Length: 209
Image 1 (tube, rainbow, N blue to C red):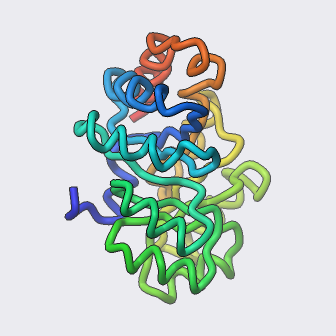
Image 2: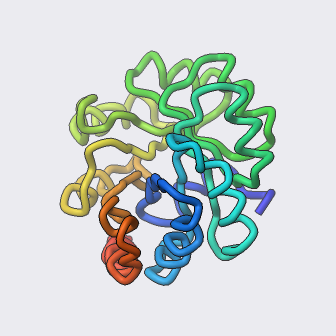
């Protein structure tokens, strides 16, 4: 899906599942479980040593899922994620160097912002699709709603502290395309291989559209 644009990421699903896997063996089953529940993309975070191998596995074995890399914090991680088969990148913040590195991969990406100044800095590069992180700790729905009139061209994927119960209040904002959430893939469900639970959570999430 090389022609995927950053703005397209905000329309594929009401929620981008933020997934942390502790073993490579969890990667393919969790991606398939999410897809079966109607969620066609995964943001697999680069927080564990197996993350890049997990991305490779999903890219090779679950082609129906758009696989992305999250927690991209350095130019090196951006390059490694792209080489592993990631189809999009997500960062918790955005420095000029990191923005340039993500752009150089040729992949769509969601750079993290938490303030008006940070959003303006990203907007100055011509990039309009952004992550808002950490959402709840940074003002949540009220803060994002206040940005709509001053940054009318920007659309956000708020992530951080959002649940199935609170997601609709974010999705109701005109400047929010989707939200990021980890509730779809609880650590205990992955550890026990409870893929039916993941599929059920994905189905409930997909219904938010």
